[in-house]
Length: 197
Ligand SMILES: Cc1cc2nc3c(=O)[nH]c(=O)nc-3n(C[C@H](O)[C@H](O)[C@H](O)COP(=O)(O)O)c2cc1C
Image (cartoon, protein in one colour):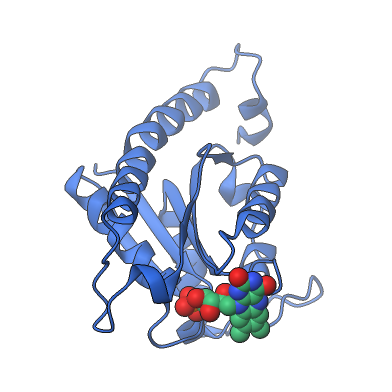
């Protein structure tokens, strides 16, 4: 079965730079044999998370949960809003927890200031859910890195996005494979033991 990478885009802008960058990284992941999907949170319009509510009837949330359960690895893409990830992306993350354990995450941020604090926040939320993170993220400066028609004009950025797509598949497969093996090995002392059925 092909390795499955889910992109999650936290900008509601129609021509979002973070979303375009994520799409390029996912294209590279497909080039390395992965299946990919892209969730545009601006289209799904998830309800604001409330632990007291199940939201069972919410179509967008059902679609998001199906995609999360489908995924072997994730690519989170956010605009930089006040040095933070977008509220839409944080709200998406709040709905899940154990679903992220043992899976690899990569990060893209559209920012005028490299978005390091944004990617640190995404990384912290993922770590809290026992997910793994790639040791780098990719920052895009929309107005400088993209032409008006949407094409990337910065070759170094294009290379980094291809690297991100490749690394998510290659390192993600290794981690997922080991996590699955640890789940089924009752004797192994590992953090995966907590997730055994
Ligand atoms: C509410 C708001 C807050 C922002 N805060 C920052 C910021 O703190 N630092 C920054 O570099 N850019 C900031 N920006 C600019 C966006 O990060 C930038 O336009 C980015 O390209 C948007 O991503 P998108 O194209 O994926 O929607 C802000 C934009 C908005 C609308």
